[in-house]
Image (cartoon, rainbow, N blue to C red; front, side, top):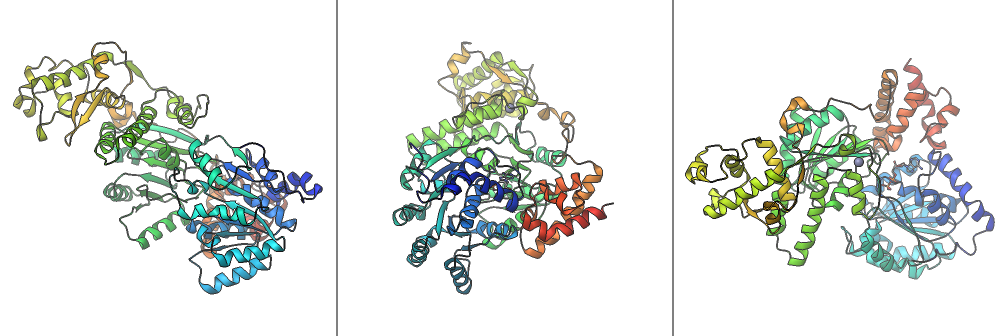
Length: 636
Ligand code: ADP
Ligand code: ZN
């Protein structure tokens, strides 16, 4: 990728120079926001002036505005419609609903429309009334639709193509779509129409693929940092995971929306039931539920306030609900990409949010075994192991989580001050000696004759031997006569589990076979000989008993409202829920939480003052201004 493509040669000079002020005017008047975020202004200016762009921005970075503002600016300048290609049919309805609320003429064409509706939209399109048209890729490439685009193009009314979720064009990406490959046809057919491709997930490889397959060599790349500063990363040691989850939700996110990821369908069901029993509104979601139930649960999650979705990774693609306040993992994700993507669904609105994970010995053992037992070839297994190692290193890290996360994506950064390790430096200790004891314990088992089947010598048995516990199994195998029996009596059960977990995570120990028999690895020898010093995390307070739990709500509510403002906020939310129901739209499309909170805090008393609140554009002021002022006034 070299230089950016020049703006349309026929773009009037005044439009080019006035581009940024026209864009800012649209941002303020239509969207009600005061300023662009990050690289938005550069992207918008470049695209509004007719340049091609490739935009890489993390989830919640504000990609939609990057094409919506140019679409409006160009439509106002008489250039016609912007066609948005998106694979997420479920999202189109809400996106168009949101534009509708802003007073921007928009529509979607996909397989969910009946013939009459589709024809009505086609008429609007041909008449030049639409500013944005969303369409699924297979629809865009359909000959009838292309003929309509021809007709618009001939009249100079085909303004811009926006290709959302552009990573779908790449087989390297995580959700390749065959139909996306055909999208280069748009460029071949309409070479003069500018294009903007957007994605939140593209490593270097995928990115090169997007450029090649969509013929975007001339497009100017805009790469934003992948940091999500409002997300706080926390990884705790697993003790009683569901209990820990319950404490976390009650203490920090009572009544707020969140997603809990579990690996298996059964665990999803059980966890959702456990939360519901504890009075937390929670719903299950996994591929084993019928389509209707899944749709219903997803719909409720999007539309209602404060629901917790307990789900397998089948849930989440295309969820752009902005006020998800936490994403919790009860099982290890596959790798760092998956962790980043899944946690990225929290806090799209920019307000504080949590990425919380509970992780323990069994997770490490299971993930390693899943790779070993998989049917993949050796090369692929090696790749998977490397990726798991990187994730385990993140989980065991004693330094800033964010620095590691960003480093994985090739970004250098400084300690963030907003992850568990930054907020409270984890205690570490010199575990060299303990590690040697554990590894010799394993070594002695092997010498003494290996345990097989149910007699396998896994972590639990090793800990019993090290701690000198005379269990039936110990007696049965004569393990009380081993030289390692009782040499670790100075450490408790939890610290030993933490040591074993970290030894496995670091690759100094391996769990084999169906019964997770422990075995030494190539790197064990150096540890046994005392050639490496091991500083490990000390077992955290959480695993030593509930009393040491973090004090509830040690930080202020993300919205920073005092009691009076809090009650105004509640009244506004109740009003919003009613409007959302009437319009059959998710509540956040009417107004975001952040907008309602600012209203509750500032208490504007006049339409002019209300217009100054972030997220209140001209159309919403007109439609809802009076009602909002009434709700605020009634608050006393
Ligand atoms: P993405 O598609 O990149 O995940 P969105 O386009 O959905 O992100 O934007 C995330 C949220 O941030 C949306 O709720 C959007 O309204 C809000 N947002 C985007 N840009 C701005 C801005 N300049 N000022 C205020 N809010 C913004
Ligand atoms: Zn940090």
